[in-house]
Every structure is written in C-alpha cells, then in structure tokens.
Amino acid sequence: MDFRKIFDTIPEQFDKYRPTYSQELFKSLIDYAAIGPGKNVLEIGPGTGQATDPILKTGCNYNAIELGEHLYEKMKSKYGSYDNFHIVNDDFITHDYGNQKFDMIYSAATIQWIPEDIAFSKTYDLLSPGGTLAMMLTNAEYRSTNEELFQNIQKIYDTYFKPETTYSHGAFHYDKAPEYGYKNFERREFYGERVFTADEYVAFSGTHCDHMVIPEPYKTKFFQGLHDAVMKAGNRIVFKDTYVLYLAKK
Image (cartoon, rainbow, N blue to C red; front, side, top):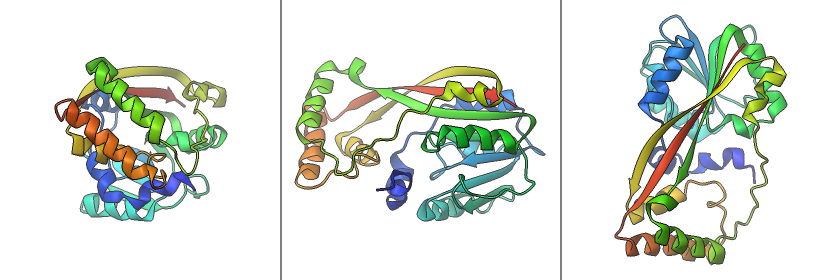
C-alpha cells in the first residue's frame, strides 16, 4: 500500500472533513514571506485545497503539484477559474521544474511524506535567494475536553484498530532544515477548535490513512464503536487544535 496515494481514493470525503488552518496562521505566513502579486509560490501536495485559498487569493502566481489524480481533478474544479492558478499532476520527488524558481514553497501536512534529504535539498534548490520554506501541520487532541469519552474511544482502538497495512512512515524532522542550508528556522503556533457530531467524527476518522486500511470484520465494528462512544457523550466531540507553522529562509 502506497500511503502517499491512499487519500486519492476519497477526494470528496477528504475535501469535506480534513481540517483547514487558522486565519491567523495564514496572515502570519503571508506577512512573513511578503506574498502577493508578482510573487511565485509553490504548494506541495495541496490535497483538495485545505491550505490553498488564502495564498491563492493574495494574487500571487500560485503553482501546485499533486500526486493523486482525483485530488488533482478536484483542485482544478475548485480553482481552475483563477487566472493565477496552476497545477500539475506529478510526483514532487521526480518532477523537473526546469529553470523555475519560487519565492515561497509551502506544504500543509504533506512534505513529511517525502524523504528529508530530497524534501529539503530540492526545495532549497527551487527557491530564489531569500525565499521562504513554510511547513504546517495540525496537532489535535480531545482528551482535555472529555476524559471519559477519550478513555472509551481508547478501548475501541485497543479492541478493533487492526490495520491491514502497518503505517511505518518515520517521523519527519522539521528542525533539520538548517542542515541543508536554510537559515532563520523557527516554529510558530496558533490555536483553534473543531466540534463534531458522531456521524461527522466517524467520517473524519475515515480520512486517516491507517484507518482506511482496517479490514473486516474489524472495520465496521471499529467505526460503529467510535460512533456509539460519541453518541453516548451527547453526540458531541470537541477537538482542541494546535496549528504548527515551521518557517525557514534560503
């Protein structure tokens, strides 16, 4: 199983339930990188645009590269009417950008799917002098909002979470960017909250790559268990989100 392409099998569900990022994060990023008309930007693996709108709407020359064919088509259907929108359906690892250079390259929970040496060295080569590398991700937790629900859900995981394919992708070390020539590396945090019903939580959980490969009979029991646990908690689960933004300069 190539987990890099598994999200391509659920473009509509992915588009509806994957988290976006806070407006404060985007304002911070746009100000930091001075993004606007005349600036060339590349987004690696946009999915269905969870981090696209605020950057595209600055009027920059927005470029994206998306590995998944169905995600690529979804991006075109959503943003193809923008004159400053450009996307290719290819693998960032092997794609030849020729003489293209970018003022900012950014990734929303995507760059970690690329081997670190390729991710950092290729982005560095593609950036113009003084260009920005931005990497964002979401850390979410719901334990602090309902300890009993958390414990009940952990029991479901202990009993039924048995993925057919083990997710063995190693951790991506964002702080290694300086080893590849980047300078001024820093981390910024922003905060948000999401509230799901039982149905919404199950649909959201179904967009996690390792949850998608749970075989039967465990899969039905697993998702039904999640649904029942949230229903018992008043049909409500609250996530506290921390949006992490890593920044570095060439």
